[in-house]
Every structure is written in C-alpha cells, then in structure tokens.
Image 1 (cartoon, rainbow, N blue to C red):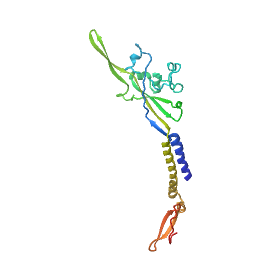
Image 2: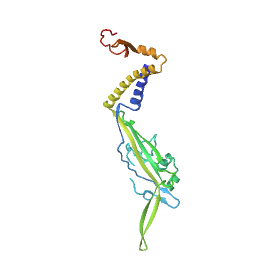
Image 3: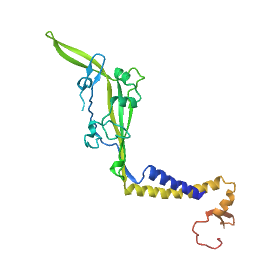
Image 4: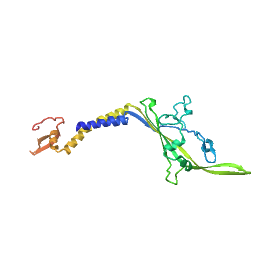
Length: 260
C-alpha cells in the first residue's frame, strides 16, 4: 500500500504536473496583439451590384498572421486550417458557415461573428511548432429580439432643387470581431525546482496516509499498533503504574534507574 501511494504521487507529478501542465516552464498568458482587416469582393442583389465602397461602412483595412508572400502566394490562397493555415484570406460565407449560421438570414437581419485566434506555443520547440488555431461563433444572442442582430444608422446629405436634404439609412449587416487568446511557455529553473521540491515532499505524505488507514480501518489494527509502537511502562511516583506509548522508530532516550 505504501509503495502504491508513492507510485500514484510520482505518476501525478511526472505525468500531469510536468508533462501535461509543463510545470518546468515559466509561462505567460494574454498576448498583446493588433489585428487589421481589409474587405474585398463584389456581390449582387436583385436591384444592383455592390462593391466594397458601398457595403463596408465604415471603411476598414486583416493582417497579422502572414507567414510570408513568396511567389505571389497571397494573391490566390484561401484560408484552410489543414493546407493553408497562414493564409490570411477568408471567405465571408465560409466564416458564417463555420459559425453554424445561414448567410442569407444573417445578412438580412444582421449579426456579430467572432473569429477566435488561439496561440498556444511551447518556446522550447522550433518556431514551426507554434501555429494558430481558429474557431468561429456567433456572439450576439439571436433568440433575444431586443438585442439580437447588428444594425446602425447613418445619413447621406444632398441638394435637391435648391433644398438641403438628407436620407437616413438604417443598415443591417455582419460585424466581424477578431479575438486573440494564447499563452507561451519556456523552460525555467525556478518553477522546476519548486515543483520538484513539492513532489519530494508529497511522497513523504504517503507514510502518514498509510499509517492512518492501517490504524483506523484495518481489522488487525491492534497487531499493527503493537508492532508500530512500544509500550513503555514506568513506575510513577507513589507506586502507581503509568503507561505511555512511543513510536518504535523514535530515538532511544537515556535509560535511568527503574526504566526499560
């Protein structure tokens, strides 16, 4: 039992603390990031053809995860989490689809889509092992009529027959929020020493735990107690016997007259 408890404690520290949690590393969370976006493309509606200047309000400019533009790679690539992880070009319909939404309904009613970029990097490995992972989800509560969707108002001013006029437009659309998470870790001597000391200290807890189990729940706990402890009976003053219990493993005290 004692060796089994020690083995479980060692497995916990080796497998979980050092391998899974990387307790030998000094880690930092909350990366500082800046993400810029640029929208391109032409689309059609029943009455007109739209370009970027008409359907992007206000004007925006997505970069940040570009690995390198070699041989015109960025001119023809489209993001794919398997083959083109570092291509920063996304199709809007693909983003909406991966968020589990219908593009037509979302464009008519408006909505907010979150693009979550997660960097989880082990700096003890080469840079090629530090890759981003992407996920997409809708951020606005679509089942709540009060706050669902995304829309805003803006005005266009013009002169009509000498009269200053304005058109107030309520626009519905898709808003993209880019959210960056991540953490990075690198070997450090201080957390390694701290976790090793904690592991060695915890191994010693096994002795106390086994003693408590054997002395409390074992059917033959009296026999275990007799082997674990010595009974030292010393005559007390006045001839009345006095019994005290000491651990057999404790250092022997100096013997005096009348003592065992």
